[in-house]
Structure formats: C-alpha cells, structure tokens
Amino acid sequence: MPYRLIDGSLQPVSYTLDDVVSMIKEQDIRYVDLQFTSLNGRFHHVTINAKIIDKTTLTEGFPKLDGSSVKGFTYIYESDLVLKPDPNTFAIIPWKDQGRTARMICNVHYGYTNERLSRDPRSVAERAESYLKESIGTSYWGPEVEFFVFNRVVWDTLIPSKGMGYSIESKEVPWSNDSSSTIRLKEGYMPAEPYDTLTNFRNQCMDILNDYFHIPCEAHHHEVATGGQCEIDMRFDTLKNAADNTLTYKYVVKNVARMHGLVATMMPKPIAMDNGSGMHVNVSLWDGEKNLFYDADDEYAELSQMGRYFIGGILDHASSLCAIVAPTTNSYRRLVPGYEAPVYVAWSKGNRSAIIRVPVYFRSQEKSKRVEFRAADPSSNPYLCFSAVLAAGLDGIKKKKDPSDPIDENIYMMSSERRSDLGVRQLPPTLIDAVEALKSDSDYLKPIFTHDVIDKIIELESKDYMEIKLRPHPYEFHLYFDV
Image (cartoon, rainbow, N blue to C red; front, top):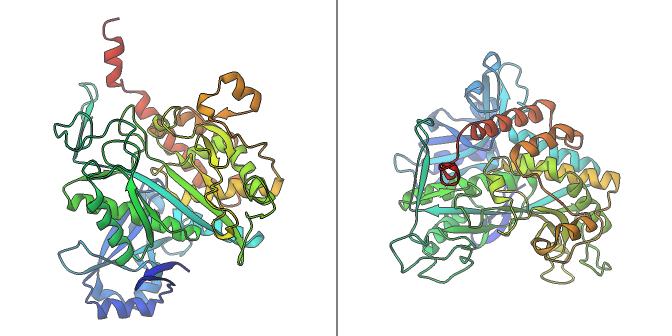
C-alpha cells in the first residue's frame, strides 16, 4: 500500500475501483490517460473517454494495445494486449488544458487468455516483491534521481554518412553568453541564486509531485554539474511503488520543463568533461517493524550480517547488474574515474568512490539504516533496476557471500597495484562488456526475471551498442583527420 502526502501528513492510500469511478464523476474528469512502461523504461499512454469508464471496464481492462509496436513487448503474431489500470495510481494531471484529465498506471495482460505479460516491467517488480515476501518480508527503496535541464538541445543524425553533431544551450554553462549565471564544470553543487537558475522550476515540480500525484518529496537542489543538473528527493516506498514514483517523477519533470520553455533529460552523460547523472538506489529489508540491516552492536556502521551478505551479493554480480542498472551506451561515458561516478567494485561507509555506500549521518537510527547502490543511472527502467538489485542481494544472503573488508580510502587516487592488492576490480567499461557479463551470470536473476525478459534485454542492448559502434564519433575527426 503506497503512502502519500495528503493534507500535510503521510497517509496510506488504497483506492478501490469504486473509488476511481466516484472520483471521475465527482471531479468532472473528461479523459483518463492509461499509462504503461516499455521494457526499456519509456512511459507510453492511451487516452480514454471518461464516459466509458465504469467498474466493469476497469475490471476487464481496455483492449487498446498493439504489443508488437512497443519495444521489448511481443511479436506481431501475439500482439493483442489488454491494459488493466491500478486504482492506487489514480492522479489528476494538472497541466492538461483540453479537459480535466486523470491518469492511472496499468498492468499489461495478453488478450484472450488474460495471462500477465512477462515482459511487462511492472510484473517483474511484482514477482520481486512476492519472492522477497516468501523468505524475508518487505523492502523499502529510495532512489535519488539526477537529471539535466537545458534551454535547448539540437542534434543531427538523419544522414549519418554526411555527418553528425549536437549542441547544448543553457544559461549556466561556461560557453553561455549570459555570464551572470554561469557555473564552471564540476562546480555546480548547491550554489545560491543567481547561479542556480532552476529553483522555481524545482519548486513547481515538487508541488505537483506532492499535491497532484501524492508522491512525498523532501528536498531539492542543484547538483555538481553545470548546465542545470538537478535532484529532487522523494520519500522511500516499497519496490513497485518506488518504481511507479520514479517514472512519475520523470514524467512530471519533463512536462514541467516543457511548460517553462526548457527541456529535461535523464541521459546519464550529456555534457563532456563534467559529472553525469546517477540514480543512487537506497534499499533496506524489513521483517514487520524490524530493519534487518540494522545492528546496534556493529561498531563499523551499525550494519547487520544480513546487510553484509546483501552487499556481498551485489558486489559479486556487479558486472552483470550493469546491463540492467546502466543499460545505455551513454551510461559508460558516466562510469569513468574522476567524475564522482562509482566505477570500483567495493563497499564502505560514507565513501562515494565505492559502488556501495552505507550512509552514516546519525547513530542509533534503525529506521534510516540502509545500503546505497551508486552504479545505477536514470536511463534504467526502475522496475527492472530495483528487482535486479534485490535479486543480487538476496543471492548474497542465500549463499552468505562475504563482501570482504570495507575500503575507507579514495579509490580514485589509488594505484592500480594497490587496488589489485585489495581485490578491487572495475565495472565493465562498455555496454557490450556488461551484456557479455549478463550472458554468463544471470542465474541469480531467474527467481524473478523470466528467460524471455533477460534474452530481450540482451538483444536490445546489443543492438544499441552496434548502432553506436558503426558510426564515426565527431571527436575522431579532431584526433585523426590529419593522419
């Protein structure tokens, strides 16, 4: 059951189908957007006339989806799919001006048989929660989603053989003509106005997330990179709800940016030589009211043995995890040393150069004890990302995988010999290396991910890698044109 910020306080929300029918009538809703997510994490929608919605249509679902036209879903011979709305995701979309419009996120089912589509990312998240419930209990997830907001971005790739390029415009970038608000590369962390030009934009995003979509947000700020890198902090929630919230967060940010004449992107590394955008994933496991990652007697980080085994599982499967949590070729332009992106397979408390950090802001706070996985980025599908991280951690618990000693040094500054002595390895350098790791290391995913989901991830990402590999990079002309 999701928790929502209602009238200034956090309250559990559980809408029934009858509630949805009543709210549509009481709030004069004219249209309902049925939203769903492709395997690669893009939001899609179909708009329904609210007059045809009643309890029967909500129960049976809406036969409005050609699955062969959605990336990663179905083949052409099995393309009739049905959308079944989740009433707990009902929300008013405030920026629609052609009639009052609500939205609901949907589960995707096959037509005729009514079976759940295994490649519906939401079904993966539901399998993850069921698998965890059988053995341990529940989990809470707090993603920290970073993104960029630019004034304008253009690119030309229509005729690759002729040439390709892109251009980024922002009031904040060092090449801007507006010197009153420029921010140097890697110096954008929490500057005051006028250098932070996006405070009002983030205020509006937070208000809409809180007031219309009932997603509790705690704070927002400018991030380290120039060019309008931002972060808005959402409250933690259970796995599927947190994934719903993450996709809604992206949806709101992009639409509010458009309202301001701006453009927002979750692309991990749009600006060369500056920090990229990550999605740090905070997770804890609970049995009822007990945080299973908390141990008050642990002197190092008040972290339980179960928490250590969970970390051990993630470290053990880090390379194959990258194919799911960092699923784009651009992800690996972020995962390089020197830009605060975690590239080394290690863990620590408070050490942001390791891929796993155990936050230690306060002592003796069971409710806040968690593990932070720092290799993920916002190009990932949150349903798949959280489920894969959970699968790796649970494999570590099941097999009692020792994460080895924590590394309380700046790993970026270590020599390669020192890292080798400590057993610190590096994440895959490219997407295809991550895909190859997934091909050889996927058994830990199989209690949650079906074979066809894993195979489709490998297929789609291999194709993306080849699309980039086949084309010259513009900077190669600078390096090699005079050879």
